[in-house]
Image (cartoon, rainbow, N blue to C red; front, top):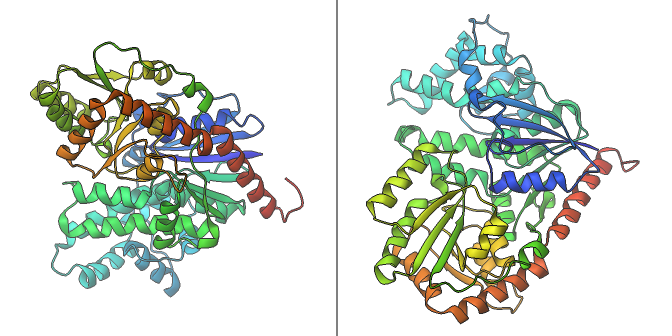
Length: 475
């Protein structure tokens, strides 16, 4: 079977996290061919991939959002839009509930023709109407350019060529989910969606914290991403989450319950379980395997570690992960480390996690949002307990779900520096308790989060979607 994987802002450009998970999934399914349909932010990233493509990746189709800024546009002629089409466009630009089949039909042309619609008199008429109704106290020019900037990426992407495949699979909602929906609608082939985190919640947090979206337009931007997610939920034949609570959130946002499935992550348990305990050396070494981006909240990690260092001088923090994804944020984190005088905090860059975990006593995660973090699962498989923020299913990983094993670490509120510091100090204080928690975590991973279990569930998911699409007659 040929599977088209649709990626937004991750594989193959960015290492770690979802990218690492997807790379492993593809390599573990040599019986299938894969096509990568990748959405990148900047065209300068073309060819600069964080991964060497597995042999069963037969094609890589990448599209970059900044390419649309160099398009040579011409003012289009007026279209004879029907009342139904105008209503659909109103709902689209209001970030409401448009008829997506009409959207896909209206913007089934080339990317340049689609984007040119934003220069048309039809668009201007609609925006004048919506501005007067929805934002009468905001300058029209501000509203006009807000809507243009919001929908330029969507219309550009809708004009890209759909790769041929037997099945379309997106690892996030958002733009990738809309492309999967378009592929399903235009080709009749099945579309599946997996969310590692809840895409809409993550975008909502980013927009609320950002300064580049004016306050009076933030709600509109948030509604736009919820609209894209509902589109993906509507068109996908199955929508998977990593844990039960995330599946319930998907249903709250609008996914039909009968489409929802829970497939937990899995790790190579035997490889990580074979990592020996750290040799005593007089230090307590803390490891954070993490992308250096704001949503991972490295700054709270550094502030909390500085409080720990006021109490103990025998601690080291190893922040393991690539530094190039958000170079500005990385520079801010390095500056903060220097300001706090944290000579014992080390940015290692990209490392072999299997090897590096030999040096680590326990793992640390300070994220603002997560799904089911592989770094925590891998640490647990290696017998390392964890201190995490209470996001995603971190509490479920550490405390279990009716398994009576016990607790494999500490879970604290996000952005709570003193609570994080107290949990780290508690973990540092008692080596025997660390080992006990590490053993509990290792047992939990062995029972519930093995890579082979996960692979079997995804293989069954893909094959069943193909059977259903073929009327159950063949694979």
